[in-house]
Amino acid sequence: MNLVLIETSGNQQYIFATNKLRENVGASELTYRVGTQWTFDAIRAAGGPDLWPEDADTFTLRENLLNQPQIESSGGNPVEVVVATSGKALLLVQERTVGKAIIRHVTSKALESAPGIDVCGVISDDFEWNKCSLDEVNRCVHEIFEDVRANRPGPVLRFLRLPVVNECATSGLPAAKWDDLDPNDVGARSDVAIAKRDARSAYKERMRRLLSRRRTQLGFAENVDKLIDKLETEASWLAVIHADGNGLGQVFLEFGRYAACERSEHNRSFVDKLRRFSLALDICTEDAFLDTIDEWVRTDPGVWYRLPILPIVLGGDDMTVVCDGRAALYFTVRFLRRFEERSAQPVGILSKDTDEEKNIIATIIRNRVSVCAGVSIIKPHFPFSTAYDLAEDLIRSAKQVKEFVKHQENGAPWPCSALDFHIHYDTSGTALDQIRARLMVDAGETRLHCRPYVVTPITRLDGTDGKEWAELHHWDELQRRVDALTETDDEGRRQLPNSQMHDLRAGLFHGKAVVDARYKLIRHRYQAEQKTTITAFDGDREETLFELEPRERRPQSSLEQECREIYATKLLDAMDVATLHESKREN
Picture 1 (tube, rainbow, N blue to C red):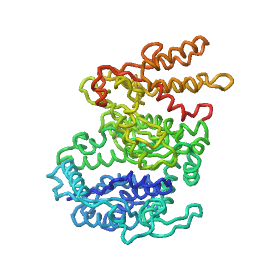
Picture 2: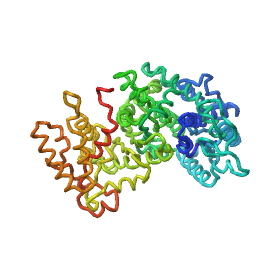
Picture 3: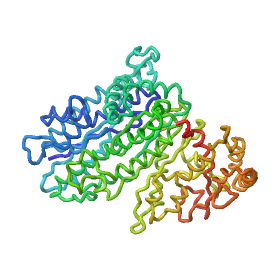
Picture 4: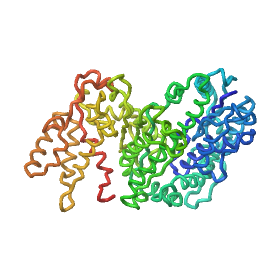
């Protein structure tokens, strides 16, 4: 037999190549089709089972994947699908020629229907089912894929500039035709832009089927264009949110060890568990998204349309959305918590399995899955590609929680979800290192932020090393300060005037001593007037805005490595969140 891996690369660069949301959602749909419809069409053409339902229903597709004939015991079946998800497919084939035919079909379809997408397929060496460990073959085929991908020319070389041609109005690539279908958006278009726009209707249909599972979200697909228009023309802030599971990449690469099916006699168990695990992750991500929207919409049926949220990627442990900036942090915090909860529950589609294995995620991970997110909040005309790059940097920052919150017994990272965010007020210094360097004062002894923030409920961290750090960096602590900033009196005026708070903000950049002196004066005045909300900003003692970081904290930069003690404040973080804050009264 052989193992075939088909996978796309540079997905986010392909999806966010332009600031046109109509093209972004279409690019997402084309990426999804690579690992699903186009692969299944290729399998059918190669004599394999017909797994793609005519109505493209996700539930039927998953049922078909779970009920496939086993390749080693069905002589007439040349292909068995192990994993099929957005942008990736892993297949078992009886003959190498079958694998080549499938790869040829998928890559040819991609060139025809999704010009500009980067997709590659590789085939493992021949192996015997009963003698070779599929776990080892899986590792080898991923290594082969990395080598092939690194040594092949990228898709940009397909679009040469000679002879000189007109430029696409949105992608910057060579134009292929004049597009005047939309009277409000006429211009020269590249083949890439046209393919993305044409795929938008398929995206809307897929989202309609997904969201129809919840009554509160009926009508979303019919209003996608309205949501896009609202985001592109009315939003004062936009957000690109990217969420990614913690440590799951390593789980997939060493799946045999995690699932206790490393040896050749466990090959059937390896296939079944990996398929179910992949499906369970897809379902958890979708359900967490739907749960989050449901929770919000129940409080105000019109809020989703007033502060639109547009899913771009929902698959595996990945979620990427573009939304109104005012909704970004509210949505992200709740999504992370819902994902944790969903990963600790049995998955409905697997209900036919034994009670011990209904929750395949908990069986493999031996706990719930934690997830981290980066939230990049930008002005509408800021390049999406740069905003996504910043969101990825913010995810890496958020994933520092694994260095701080660990199991007491073995020192392994404890499941802990977190987020980091940045509101980009200007176009200078888009690299996160540069941004955060400007928030260090007093020769590196004082940090003007406390990011990243832990989202996992603090009660789930009982008995862990690093709980003290998590309490200092917990979202609930930041929310308490945001509530203080936005609290109003009986006449609807803020109890803490903006002028006073902005005076404190300006003082932050002069150092700890200066701003603490200003805070002491304001705190004393407001306490005398019996306005106690300002005490929410007290640090580790009264009359200071700063808290001393736990000493066991690992250094983050060369500036901090030289210091024994680091002080940090949540004031700037709270003021940033308050600028986007939607009060409970408004929502």
